[in-house]
Amino acid sequence: MAKKFFIYTFGCRLNQAESNLIRGKLKQQGWQEVGPEEADYIFINSCAVTQKAAKEVAQYVRHCRRHYPQAKIWLLGCYVDSLRVAGQPLDLPADRFLTNEEKRQWIGEIIPPAQGRSLLKIQDGCNQFCSYCLVPYLRGRSQSVPAATVLEQARQLEQHGARWLVLTGVDIIQYYDPEAKLDFVGLVARLLQTTKAFLSFGSISPLIGQPQFLSRFLTLYRRYPQRLAPHLHLSLQSGSDKILQLMRRPYRQAFYWQTIQKLRIIPQLNLTTDIIVGFPGETAADFRASYNFARRAQFGKIHIFRYSPRPGTLAAKMGSQWGLVPENIKKERAQRLARLEQRLRHQFWQQFIGQKLPVFFFSPYQGQTVNFIPVASHRPQPTNQFQLRRLVKIREEKVWLD
Ligand code: SF4
Image 1 (cartoon, rainbow, N blue to C red):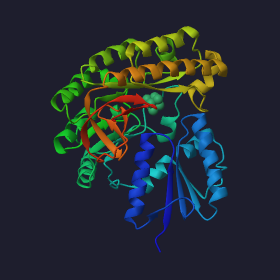
Image 2: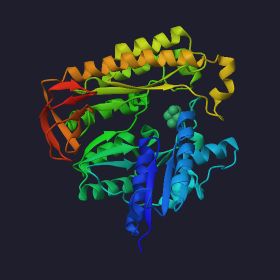
Image 3: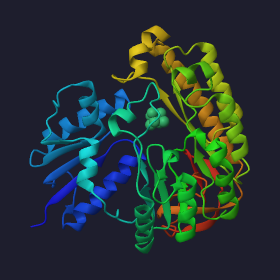
Image 4: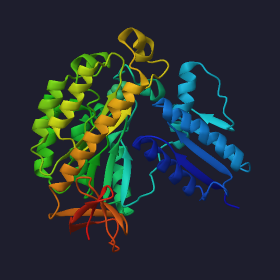
């Protein structure tokens, strides 16, 4: 009888991509995907990038143990590595624990199952060591998937129905394949030449503004305007140079600003970002710098994070010396920024009301424009392909077609 599994994914796009690889691997071996109540195995692909995420993972493992006693529980990825880094025992009621490295080895090289929009993992790990971030400790140094593997996976995904590929990694701009002599922009160019798929990117470092990348990157947008998503997510994290320095971010606000001015030549560009509020040392003036920067940059969406220390990071060690921000102030700053975020997002959407844009429906009633505006329809729409549709009104945090 086929073994039955359930997989639950926390966290980032990279984790989602890896869960898809696991799904593909198990299905290839004849396993059947079911709900957790029927599963012989529950795989929990975890996140520990914030305190909140780690707490949710621990709660979910306990929940599964209590409610699905029939299942063997495997906990995978960042949560396991975070305990390893902190030297803490694996004290959750799971049957097996796999670190990110063990997870990678277990997955091996396989083709993920294709969906209309499919994640394509090109890179893992990070060399940057931002002072607040555990990722380099959890996922190790930057490693690139060989270009030949990426191209073959893309070809097979397309053959099995993928129309849209999302290039995914921790920091995809760190991509480099020494054998093929391809950096991130070179790999994108090769994918544009060898596939017909529409391409978008997970988060991209503001270092895309460096001379060795920027003009080549913009040339691709000019040459393939129908093939590259006019959506870029560049993490700002703070609009204050003092805080960026404490964060050990590799750019300053003026560089970020110049970069986005140059990127704005991409028509219909939706520029989105992440901002951390309440980082140690953040004064009212530093927060104002972030707020004003966001307002001037007119981001189409901002992911707002309230800073929480992650044991083992530089910021966790130095926090009290740099000046801890009280929780109530963090909360108040996050709320102020969230109000601005909603206003900017709606302003961005508003400029497209009345216009026709390519929309990709993932399900008959829910989709996304080519520049990442969430779209809904009362009438069923053809799925997994782009259709030119007129955007009519904003309601319930979506743009409606009718
Ligand atoms: S670039 Fe900085 S924030 Fe992003 S994964 Fe690397 S260390 Fe973490």
